[in-house]
Image 1 (tube, rainbow over the protein chains, first blue to last red):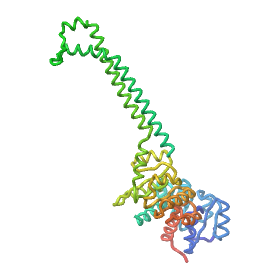
Image 2 (tube, each protein chain N blue to C red; image 1 turned 30 degrees about the vertical axis):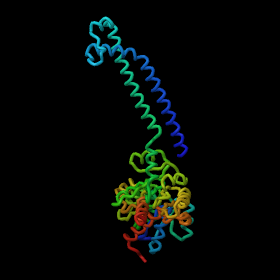
Image 3 (cartoon, one colour; image 1 turned 180 degrees about the vertical axis):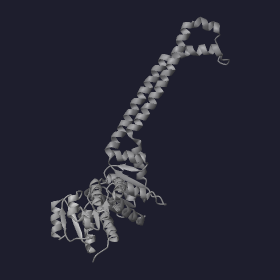
Length: 139
Length: 259
């Protein structure tokens, strides 16, 4: 991804990744997505979003996405171990990068923070907060 | 679950009848065997300690004629063995009662009965990390609200019994199970299972039983959210969607936005 600077790399284009991409694009932030699934890669190309087809846990894919010049990275794959691996790799390639990631298992939250993540979103935690607020309204 | 309850009920009745028959026969046999021996033992005790009002007091001289030392020893041995036997029977009866209680899994019925008496309560369908977090948060509220869980996983049922959380064992797509959780009297029902089809059926069945019930549901796909609302859900959450928003918002706050 030549010429890109201060962009945001999004790893994984599932429900979480797609939402992150949409929010960033709405605010005119330059985005590069790393995705393994060829069908999703095609969808991204059709949308005109820069994409690297590959494994976000590898240095090769991260370098190709311009990690050295990136401002932040959103690691949003559906596998906690992969997210941890990608966090460690990203931090080793760019010490100043802002890392936001997800954890399905709450036990991974501290591991991801220890590995260098600045923010960890836990889908179940977020959902339980939303449901709780709605329940309280109805009581 | 209803079939299971019926089956367990039959087993309890059968086990009780068999236990009673065994106990009655054992007691009759013991009585028959030991009756005369006890009569003899009575004379011995009477002779030794005296029974002023009985009029049947024997003196030791008579006794020594009637019961030579060998016979005396035999009688006393039999009395001891007989009492040990009775002790064994009592132990057997206690063990049988414990066995019946544990087989019938009374906890399950107590828990279900508790749920069936609830009103204006919260029903949580499916027990997982999301449900666990939700229950934890609800328990922090100052005003306590009764919560009933519906789940058909055996390990979950045991765990919730241990934690004293009322649970109805079965599938929440079954109206009979929803009735056991007193859905017609509940205020809120939350479907947290990672199965959109089951959650959808659950909403339909719950709304059939109670139009006023507030139905909250989790979905696993964005495209299913509208379906949930169409069948009557009051709120539908997609955990991954919410997580995506929080990551996006975090990044926007922390990066310089170039427009």
